[in-house]
Image (cartoon, rainbow, N blue to C red):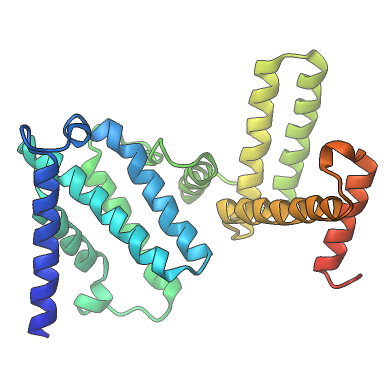
Length: 272
């Protein structure tokens, strides 16, 4: 156990040393030196998505590498913070450890929960209390929902927050009624040929669909990713069918491609 702990400590220390060397004002990497929190943030998001992609593909060799890249992002931000005398890598880990212990009183304390639902409910209460402590200047129920989140995820979080204080549809039928209302308004905007109005109404439709997913306990991001994957798989099947005929999609009619699409769909279902 000691050898494993020593190895871990050395690996972490080495990463911190590497990051410090990359940011050295005289001997470091010119690209790394000129970066700041704003320029690195998009890379942090990208690395998180690459971690998720490795998980989706069950590519655990890639997962190991991508998790390392994500750790590098943490080290990068922590190094910049250390240079600004705000905090360092150790502070980041210690803050994380304290938070995880605080949010798991059923593991590290004497609180008992019977079900995962009870655990989640307590977790949300603790997070809400932490938000109150951190966001003194904003007492809105919606305070702290990160703006850079993917739009579907942010819509879900915003509506979930509002639902906690009773601002929610009573049932699924009410959500469908709202969806029909927004679709009607979208058609009206299209008839007006007002691009800005059309964009606004399509946004409203998407927002209602996110709430429909929320009410049905469906992750809208996951649902859309699944739809994307399905579309890509079936369209590639259409392309492959045309390729076997020595043709490309540009050389096929819409009706032909639609027939091949239906065939791909039925094939997936084992109906052909």
